[in-house]
Image (cartoon, rainbow over the protein chains, first blue to last red):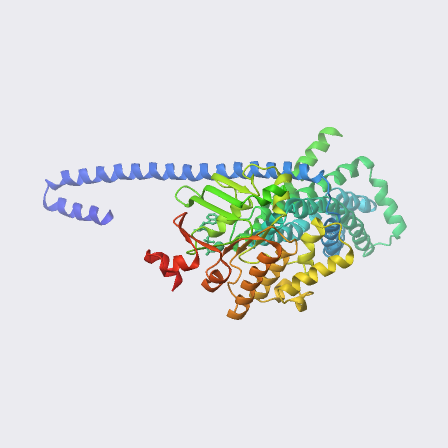
Length: 299
Length: 249
Ligand SMILES: Nc1ncnc2c1ncn2[C@@H]1O[C@H](COP(=O)(O)OP(=O)(O)OP(=O)(O)O)[C@@H](O)[C@H]1O
Ligand SMILES: [Mg+2]
């Protein structure tokens, strides 16, 4: 277009009658530009609509998946053996990871809060503050995020690869309900194990806090814990406990949904694991936000 | 139930259609029937919809159109319970074996058995597993994980797993693919033996013409979504249609 312009301009200098042609050309190019930008907008909105469509479709499918879970979960026979196995894998095998992060959380939080507290001369409140933040917020959210990374991705990849290699189909044709065997057991296991892991992280986190405090001052363990528990009230702890069940439920649900609905092809296994983590992490934050708002309203 | 089994056609498919998306009609009206105790071989080019057909037969995939009758019951809209009662009597050997990765060979076999034959004693249970593994000559791989097996061994374990429930109908999806000539022949003879011993009716999908010749009472050829030709091995081999004959070279 620029070349054409230069050409026409240079021609214009030589021959005035060509100016007319130039104006026409310019007009055409303008019209073209307008048309193409309309086209672009149209295309963009089309992609947007397609995207929104897929989001709503996904939401609908997840809801159906959830309904199916509740239906199948209450129907005997129950897959007790597989459930226990999953509890072992999900709960016991995550203890080290959750323990280490819990300890570091408590330690770091205490060390970093001390200077500020000291500035206000409120150092003696440090245990209470650390205890409150660990139990109400930090331990549940960090543990849930770690579980999202470890468990949701693990379930997503495991079920995804079972789906892709037709193992789920094989169960179905041998008249074994794969939803019950694979999905229900895992979701129930995460729903029960994540709260336990959070409880464990609470304990280790508080120990970490105790170590952090003892770097600069001398607190006995008994003194520390009595200070922590003095600052906690049942009303503070209850919502924090309740939300961990929701964290666990959604970690299991999302991992299972992504894996169970993976389409054929090996790359969809990686995708199931990956989107499982992303969606689960996001969901944890959303639940956390809703939980805070709700407790604010109710208590 | 008994007279249903005695009725001559155990499997009856009429006008089966299946498409994936708008311009991807895979099956366009397949008609098939398998009599009691008959081995039906299905051949056709790769991607012609052979696997899809037998997946429709156990409702792993829902058909778009057509009527599918198994043991005289139309399975198209059957509820879960009734469907499972039929599925127990059908053995399905998957093209890629579909062994459960997280279980040993023995557990793979025990998994369906445990759920459907709850009355067995521990000894009978072990015997059933050993017998099934012996029939595919893999008794030594009993405690191995599927990842430690070769492709052919996996296929044989898959076969043992399907046989353990002594099904009335066997659906074999390429039972001999990936096996050496000798093992292939052994599998073909095993298929024949199963047919004789249990009066099993089978659909055998294969690209292996030796297997087709050995096992098939009747052969159908799938092309462009329909049954293009049908007959015994000998008649099809001498068919006037060049395309049909090309399978037999
Ligand atoms: N889930 C699916 N989504 C879309 N298309 C599919 C799906 N499954 C199968 N198809 C298509 O259906 C056709 C038939 O597939 P099928 O697996 O039945 O082939 P086949 O005859 O068994 O071939 P092969 O001998 O290679 O196993 C293929 O063209 C395939 O692309
Ligand atoms: Mg196939």
